[in-house]
Length: 419
Length: 139
Image (cartoon, rainbow over all chains, first blue to last red; front, side):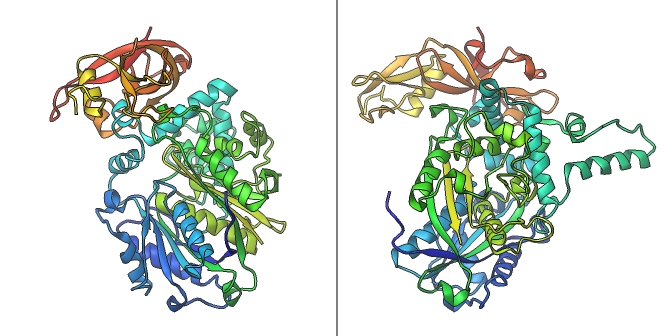
């Protein structure tokens, strides 16, 4: 594993407001919002003339919007033509890959400044179309015909994890409860409510209608009620991330020019990408994601850092079980031990290892192709001390990580950030 | 190109004849299902067809309430879930398949590790040609 030939920094980052916005806000609106929000974070300003390429991460505008060839569409909207605008696809890791490729391009010396776009507008098709489009990130010939949906694949991982390590439904619920608490503090999140808020709102609604008031004592009672129906057992509605429209924009710059844009660049000191068989049945284990293990191994080696050094992390919680697996496969906890940390609230914002301070995919939302870049936006904000509302870390974040998965774990991209 | 070449199409043709076929590597003995032209272990084109016993264990599963359009066409929905499963075959490889003969509405009664055997599922869905899907049931 080589080193980066020169240092590369994140000098600006922003997202659009995530939500279910079609037809009011489509690809152009999300992208321009993300661009403007990212430009606003560049201390000394950034202009299209400063940027040499636009790297676009998008999973499937083809299936969601019947729109291919997204690269030049994105670059046109922000005045980057005639510069190169390639598109990168790796399911839900698409913009993690775009960011990594921008990083490698800059480190190579070929370019100094690249704009990374992550985007997905998913609600142009009905739910059944979303399920179908996402399912094509699995092995269509052998998994899809066996009935696999996206939640179904992660549910199968959960069933194996529960069997091997004794992980429970309550453990999964704890992940969702924590991420919703964080998402409440994120003005760009799709669902800015804690599960307790949602429970109380439901009780008030039933009371208002003169119905029988449910005797839920806490979030766990609520999550065990019919308000949280199974989607793909053992996963229920609140174990699943959201269907989201959104975009994220990142500005990456070489060490030679970074200081022109800001006095406080965030250096990307490690990157890794791993692959595993797209079909789960072709892997050697169902309770760990091998691509995560490999991507993080590369990133740790490149940066010279280890799991203990990561002060905070944005991990790919497309489903609650995925956050548990990530915490283990990234080496933060031994296999089977992550649930204890979750029980101890170690992963809360005031815990020993805060995870998904943004609210994660669970509460912030999961516009699949935008997710990898959006994770970097949260880390950028936390490290710069500009995270909104009450979610800014109370200590100075000096080292952090993003972990971005594609499909059921066929692709993984990990990036490490340092001040 | 021989008629019996290891291809996806021939694997599916065997499936339609109710045979679960894998490939066995003549060099290293690795068994792969579905069958592969290149052995998954030594990556050599030294494989030949081998029929599976159809016996195995349940490695992972999900009882799915919100299914794929294909399974919705097969008649499944929120009230009538189906089980997607990963089966570890006695010969070593794992396969994805529908698990039938279990109580889909009470998935807590289905246990990872339970013994299963192959059950070829004849599918007749309007608008699609008649076919056989791979299924398993409790042994």
